[in-house]
Image (cartoon, rainbow, N blue to C red; front, side):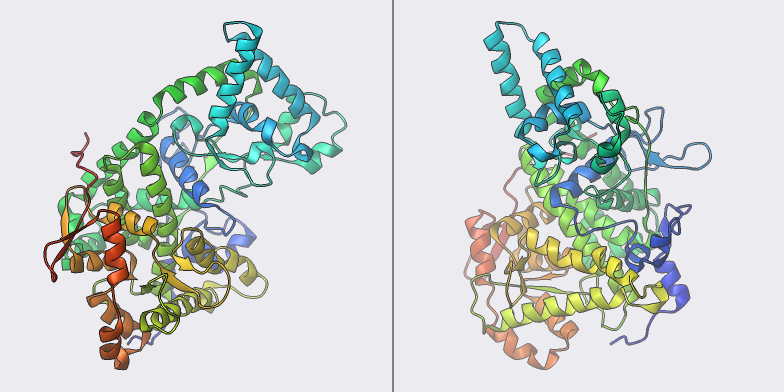
Length: 536
């Protein structure tokens, strides 16, 4: 077992940023926040699952240069002077039309109300028919767009998020500076109000999606990186070598673009019409550059796994909305995986895990299993060990975290893991003791979609090994022995091996239509969603 701590030079290597010219000490908070130094800029506990996906797709689909170049690609393109970012739309007119009437009364400023009624009249003038027909058409369109709300909660209308079901619904985060607006005695119309909308706060789209984008941009910027070629030669990862990394880039870009453009094509036309009629509401900062943060350069490994899984999901014959649901789960799991991968690089107090390059384990247990079952006890111990790792690594003196900055660091690292894991059902129960890893039917379906190529057939034990190789999730078979070794419970390996049953996993796979039982001893996991040939 490895017990030595990495040297300062090694840690500096682990936190080297991509892009290489990123200003990782740009603010005093960044200098003292050990989570931002370790994981990149940034993951944050208040970002919701749908906003991870929406922000990820927003950066991907937006131009990377002011002249409009670089949309639909995983690249960063430097402007003159070396600065880089992306140019997202604000979608403020669309949000006003779709969300204002259902937002909280106390968040509606009189100027917003006046602009809303003006917008309704402009759109009514564009509709043919009688007065009643026009009113009914407007209500139907509002109902349609309102159905694509991703996050509302107790926010003001402008901070609502759309589901990222189309490029037409992707927009940057906007915030209404209510306190400043109240103090503005000259605020009487929409033009005056524009200066009180902020585009740089990152309260909800908190850069987590940007960070996931940068991981892939980092991966694809150096497809011949030695660590990637070495990984693809390992037996447990040979399945990802079906395509070169350069070819994988093309497939992922085309797959995501097809989802955003083809999902609801008539919706794109409708949104274009609305925004054209309401162009006067657009902010002066629409099209203003949004800066990008950075990701750890060493994150290429987990980014390669991420790219393979995106490609598998995009290749499914499911509807675009179903694929987006799977991609949302994948973005969340990628955040959890990224936290653990990077923490294990810096905190080397545990042994490696044969069959999984991340060198940690998440032991999953039957959600209905008894409290005294060995696998449930292992799963609870697994949660405890992972959370201790994530808590401990942020307090590494070589990362510079100390004092009050640790509280902020926990918000950008330690606290995220349990929050997201519970939101997607990977950790149960929601409240109370006995926290453990588990898989509900939705997550089992996700694992099949992300890891088993359409039309592929895998023996059940090989499926367990592939789940372990990508996520460190332990379901049974050889990975269980690795989990016991990593947890230090080697002496109990034999008894646990006898007592642990994977019947609950097999039953869930069978109920989802993913398991073919050839005999009592042989079962095959397959992805029945059909095959789509490589695009482009």
